[in-house]
Image 1 (spheres, rainbow, N blue to C red):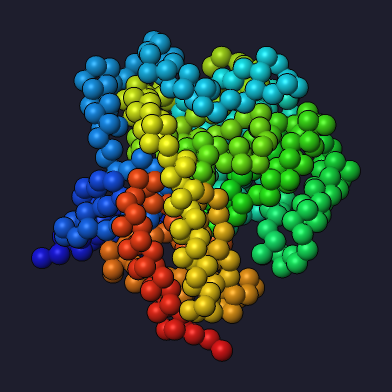
Image 2 (image 1 turned 90 degrees about the vertical axis):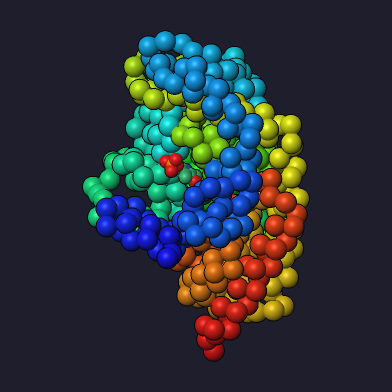
Length: 445
Ligand SMILES: *Cc1c(COP(=O)(O)O)cnc(C)c1O
C-alpha cells in the first residue's frame, strides 16, 4: 500500500484544484531540521522550506516549546480587545533588529503592526502609504510577486498567477525590473541602472502620471517568484532619491528575502537603502501564520485607528513562535550561515557550466540562490522541460526543490539555514546530477 498515493487521491477528490501543487505529489507527515518524512516513511532533504518559511528548521525545539507554553496560557484575545505582552515584545524585537529611522523624516523611530500573511502585510503597507501621502497610485515591477489577495495579486507581475481573476485594483502602474541577463545588457551595472532610472523618470516624473500622484513604489530587493533576481544596490538608491524628491513612500517587500535568508536581517541592508515601509512574513513564524509591516513611526502613525488590523493579527501563539525564531536566528548567527550556504551553492551551480549547456545564469544573495536553465545558456530560449525533468529526478532521489520564473525554468534553493553540511552537499550533488541528466534527455540542437 502506498500512503502517499492514497493521500493525494483523497486530496484530489475534495481540495479545489486551484490550490496549486508546486512540488508534484509530495506528502509530509513529520519534519525536523532540513528533513521531511513523507506518508510512506521516506526521508527528503528539504530545499523548499515550505516556500522559504523554515529558516531555523522544521519543528525547531525552541520554537515548538514556545508555542506549547503560550498555547496553554493565552491562545487568543485580539489586540483590538486586550493588550498582551507577546504582541508588544515582538514589535519591540522587530524595530530593534530592523530600524527604519532616517534623518530626513520624523523622530527616526520605527513602529510595527502584525498581521497573518505576506499578502495581508502588503495590503496594509499600501493602505498606510495612501493615508500618509493622501495619494492613490502605486508603482510595482515586472516579475514582482506580492501575494494572492486582490490588491496584492494586482501588484503581482506573473500572468499565470492571475488568470481569470480580474478586474484588478485600479491605480497600479508597472515598470521593468533591471536584469542584465534577461535584457542581454553587456555594459556595466552602472549603465543598466542609469537606463532604468532615466526610464522611470520619463514615465512617472515627466510622463503620463505626475509624481505627486504616486503614493508608493513597492519592490522586492531580491525578487522571489521571479527567480531570485537581485536589484542592483544603485537602483534601490536611485529609487530612494526619487521617492525623497517627490514625497513618495518606498516600500520594500521582504516577505521572502527577510530574516537571514539573504545573509542579512533585511536584504535592503545589502544595498544600504532604508525604506519608509517594509513587509515581512514567511520565515518570521517558522510555520505559524504571522507577518508584519514595519515603518518610520511618523508614516506608520498616519494610518487612523480602525483602518488597519484584524481579528487574528499578531495572535499570541504566533508571536511566541516568532520571538523564539528571532532568538534562534540571533544566537545561531544564521545570516552568516546563509552566506556560507550561498557561496557553496553558487560554486556548485557555476561548476555545472562545464558539464551541460543549459546554464543560463546563477544568481542570488546569501542563501537565496537560483539557477536559470536555458538552451545554450541563451535567456531567450528558456528550458522549462529540462527544469521540470530535473526537479522530478530530484524528488525521486529524495531532494525537494521548487522552481520559479515566468517560464518555470529556474530552480531555487530555500533550504532551512540549519541544514547540515552533509545534507547540503548530498542535496546539491543530487540537483547537479539531475540537471545534467535532464539536459541530456531534452537536448536540442
Ligand atoms: C510569498 C510572498 C508574498 C505573499 O505571502 P503570503 O503569506 O503567501 O500571502 C508576498 N511577497 C513576497 C515577496 C512573497 O514571496
